[in-house]
Every structure is written in C-alpha cells, then in structure tokens.
Length: 504
Image 1: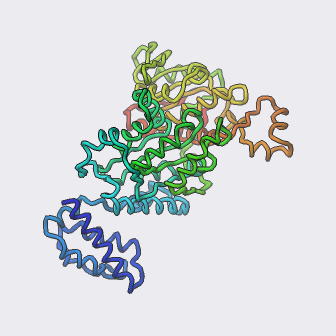
Image 2: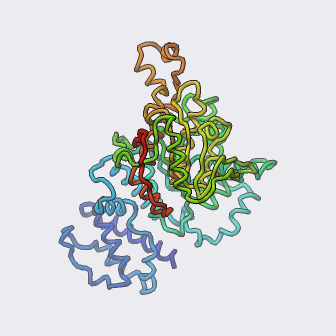
Image 3: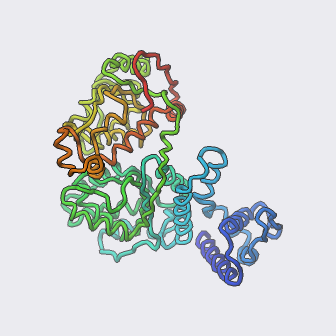
C-alpha cells in the first residue's frame, strides 16, 4: 500500500511540474498547503476544498487529478506520509516564541534542511529508508559480508553545517531529525560517542580482512540517515580511519548530516600526518553540501545570568561541598566504580543519589577521555568538580580533556557544580589559534610564544575553547537548570554563599 502511495505522489509531482510549465511557478507554501489538504482527506472530501483567500489562489489542478487516482483506502493511508518538515516546525516555534525571529542565517540553514527533507521523501524507496518495507532487510546484513557488493551511493547528498558557537547548528539539526518519520532508518549521535562506538566494533572484528567494511555494514543496516553532532577530529587514531570508514558508509547508501565549528578544509588542521587525512575532506565535500552558518550571535549567552553553581576561588571548596551534600540529601557519599567500554572502569571518589564529586586532577590530569566521561554520565546526572585551573601550555592536555568533558556533559544534559580559578573566558585567555597569535604580534607566533612561555598556540584548542565557554554559559543559566529540574524533578537550591558566583 505504501509503495502505491509513493508512486502516486511521484505522479502528483510530475503533474504539478507539467502544470507549472505554462504558469508562474507554484510557491512552496502553496505546495505544502495542497499536500496538507490531501493528507486530511480522511476527514473531508477533496471536492469540498475552496478558494483560500489568504494565499489568493485555488488549489492546484494536480490535486484534483490525484483525487481520481486513489481509492478510499489509498487516500486514507496518505495520513502516514511524512508532512510538513523542519521548515513548518521552525515557523511554529517562532510563532510560539520558543525561537527568535529574524535570524537570516538560521532561515538559510533551515531551508537547506527542508530541501534535504523533501529530497529524502522523494527518494524514500531508492534510499531504502523504511526499516519495515524492504523485503531484503533480514538478509541484507549477512549478504553484504559474504559477497562484495557494488557501490550504492545514495541519490541524495548529505549536509555539513558549520559555523561559530551557539548559532543554533545543533538545534536545527535536531529539529530536522525530529521531523523524520519514526519508521525510517536514522540515528542521531555525538561525534565523540560515534567514534567510540566505531572503535569498539573494530575490536569485535579483529582478524577480519577489512574490519572497517564490517563496521560500516553494521552501521548502515541500523541507520541510513546519520546525524553527527560536533564533528571535530583531534585524535590521530580517528583521523587515520575516517576516509576509509566513510567511503564504506557512503558506498552503502548512508547520508550524513553533521554539525561542526570547523569548515571541512579546516578539520584536523595541524594534526599529525594530516596529509593522510586530506582524502577524507575530499570525500566529505563530494557526498555532502557544506553550508556555513555565518551568524555572530551566541544564543547561549542570551539566557539569564548568575543562576548557576560556578564558584570562583579555591576558598569556595567548602561551599561546593555544601552544595553537593544538599543535592544528595540523606545519602552517604561513597567511592564507586563506573564501567566504561571494553572492560575498562573509572573510579569515582565520591558518589550518591546521581551526583559524583571529583578533584579536577582526577578527571582531567589522568589518561582518561571521552569513553570514561560517557560512562560517567550513564550513571550520574550531576558532576561536582573542584579546582578548575587556568589553562596554558603547561596543562594543554588537561585543557583538551576539560573541553571533552564539557562536550559530553552538555550532550548528556548533565548538571555542573565547580570551583574555578577564574571566570570561564579567563580560563582560556592563554589559549590562542595561530591566526590570533600572529594578529596580536607583528612577529611570528613562535617569537610571540617566547614572550610568554605559558602561551598555548593550538588551532584545535583555540577553536574549541569558544564552544566550551559558550556551553559553560548555558550549563549555568536559569533556563538550563529549570529544564534539568523538570527532567530529574530535583528542586534548585538557593545560592547563599559568600563566594563569587558567575554565569559561566
């Protein structure tokens, strides 16, 4: 039945295009209106459709033609066809006041996402999006391992969204993802988590001639539309496998939708053996449309101020402990162990009632990373960190781990309590990109570094710090904490302390 409906819809589109040849092009709003009229046919006949004064035109004759194509049963089944798309939802949120109107950069981006949505609807069968419809599903996964399959690149190109921090990239991608039908093969995941999953799968397929092909086959069987948030390559192990991995994924029909702070040509800039990574950039640009979001507005900075648990000064450690105790209630905090991946474990110094307490050194000055942080937030929703320092060349590695920790916390919608040496923007004042170092001094960045031995000139960290500062801002906003309270039903506690509290 669904196949018949899809064929009929394609006929409708051809009729509409044919009709448009002798007239002015039908605008998008009218096409959406006609589609909505069709999909409401179960509640009222098509012949009752009348002139819409708001748009000043009649329903397209293609709609009347389509009426004769469908039986009553087929018309009823149109209700299951995806409708609206991200543009409609975006406009609803603006109308309700949930989103700010007038951001032309976001409008340009949502138009790109709407185009992608419509292309996916048009090519649903060709892309094999319906997880229930394909008769090959049960045997496809095994068959791809037994016999080499020809390339089946998707007829639809993906989308790579990049731009500054807090401009709405993740929000727009999530809005797009939420509008995709539930029966489509889709997945939305943070890039850190995705790569951890890839490496875990590779361990399972040790000894196979091409384990990356096996991993790609598993991923593509689960999801054809792959939405990756915060695409950022800093690890040489990730960099070396990305091109082969995504070539396999794209050849199996996967469509990538991703967000990043970096343009494709800037990924892994300055990284070890970057020349081996460059083919991936070409692959990415071949299979995805790269779309910049040029807005200079950081929406995370527009929330309320002074509501969080960010305490400046080491003398505030007593206050932090008091806040931690008030959150865990009558439970006694004890050392705990968190299971991570591949049999690894992370020791938690103190934990109770979903809250964990760490010294900064225990979290960021040890050889642990994203996998440990993801494991931590599977068991705890609140993290107290004592003694966040200013970052520079001397603790550059710890700075990278702190950036990753904040990313994972934000992705998991966790709550942060911390004491820090300075306000967030001051924590990273000695971390700069090469361009920033050269701009601040007429001499080379290397000469500039000799003036301040603790100056950290690092492109990846220099870009990532803006995202971290922005996310710390949101993590400590009243709006974010109210959402956290609603999710976990934990009341916010008054910040009655003598130390400085800032909106991070």
